[in-house]
Image 1: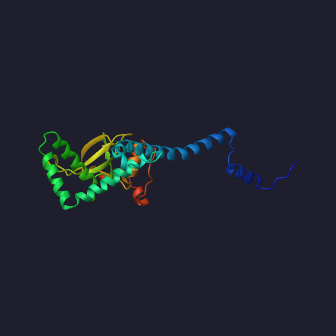
Image 2: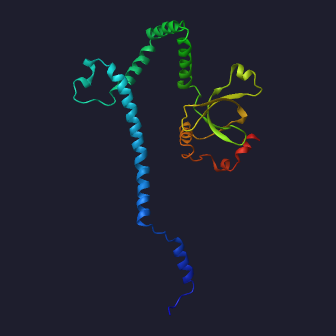
Amino acid sequence: MTDKKPGDGVYIGIEEKHKKPTLSFAQRMRAYLMTGILVVAPISITFYLAWVFIGFVDSKVTPLIPAKYNPETYLPFALPGLGLIVLVTSLILVGAATAGFFGRLWMRVSEQILARMPVIRNVYGAVKQILETVLAQQSNAFREAVLVEYPRRGIWAIAFITGRTEGEVQNVTAEECINIFLPTTPNPTSGFLLFVPKKDLVHLDMTVEEAIKMVISGGIVTPPDRRPEAEQKVALTSAHT
């Protein structure tokens, strides 16, 4: 018979409770495999997509370089990224040239010529206006993520503000509206243009990049809530009260 001290059973129970369960060899191998995938897959996919993009640009730009100015003519191997470097350099030079007097004059004459072409002028005008709106530093387009009840009340979706509603659309509505772009999953380049009353939008603290990741992943990648704890405790529906 073994003697037991008072409380021995309690201590043994606590130790057994906090003792980590031992994993079998197969379980450990599976855990290592999943860890390896989580480490290698994002890096590999990122490098692969970058390589595909660089290869696509090189295949379109490099053949346009004259042979005597192309370094690949004198080298026994290709230079990855040569086309991308040439493209970026060309865009910088075009931007610098356009900033001068003759550049502005050239742009004015070119736009006047394009404005006289029936179909091309519509395409050119629309593309230019979109790019100027999105790329302008003072523009708020796609710089804020919001929540909107869509497709019905009680169901929420992530959207991006593209600007204030103006013109006829705003004049025929009773409330002040905001233009929002509601992307689809997993392709955020397609979606819906909605004109939503300003009071029905819930502004999010997450960045646009975080919101796009959440849309692409179908909600798998969820950014943390960075709001103060007091705000986190307030129900989402209180925003409309």
